[in-house]
Image (cartoon, rainbow, N blue to C red):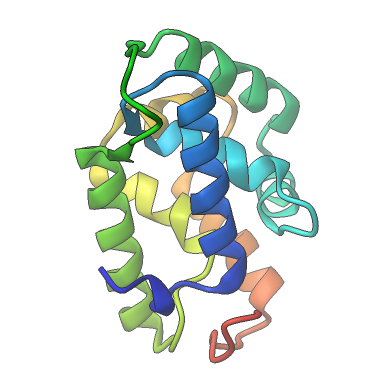
Length: 154
């Protein structure tokens, strides 16, 4: 996976997710780390997107915190964390979705759509907080206004 295909904002969210995993002594960066980083990102669009899609964002954030608290902790790993299988599957699905849309860059909103495709724990958490694929898809289209992502700073 080429990191330069992701928008600048999503690359920052991945770095923040990695830092979050390190701080929590988790060995792997899970999709929940990434979504939490996206929700907390200054100037990011994920919180607005999910609100527009009818998701209870504050409750979602709490659920993500609970999910992360339950992850196994490692000691002495010297801060080295890798992407989990679910995270890799999600990023790969994001790439596929971007190609289907004709995007030059892979943007943050595709992370949410990708979670509905890979059947992981994060999909269940999102659904419990009011997310569904159709509403998220509509919110993505509303925010994009039919535009493609052709700029890494989109």
